[in-house]
Image 1: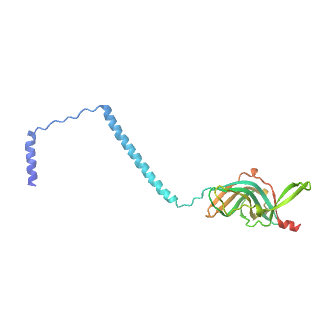
Image 2: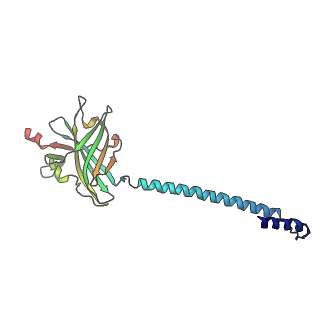
Image 3: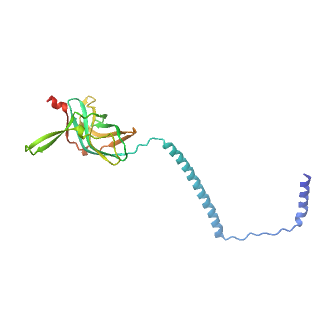
Length: 235
């Protein structure tokens, strides 16, 4: 403590007699000063923007890690409806037959499929796929050149059914598929003419659901005649 007091006394007594050199700052042009100020401001703006974007990138990365574990079902199927026909059978069920081209963008298979329909009263129904088409026949009219007359041939639907066991990427599968639903909707009989909208749902081999939307009914290709063989046995 005494040493510090002695040093202070020496500086206080002799400082007035010490001549220190005089320093003068050079004059800086105004344009240079403005440039320096602008550069400093620009640096702060750029750094602040970088910090902000860096924080957003971190947040997006965190969100992407969360979203990566959620199931994503890409739209891998493309369809073309060639014909829509109501199957004829002696019961109250409604059978909707679709002749379609179906192509997948990846190798896959169809585990199951459904048809969502809406009738002209706004009611919605779910039709299930008919797994066996052994007793259904497509009737086609043709002109028989041998007998010079109109005739009818019957084609078993199962021989021209849509094969859904396996799809190769880019290869089109053609054929008929049938869906069945209770035709007694709220006490009234529902037929194909009462259906105004349809959506097909496909469940692939990985149990992912894909929706195939149909166009407006005005463009539906309603044609063909498909009957159950039991009707011919009754006749």
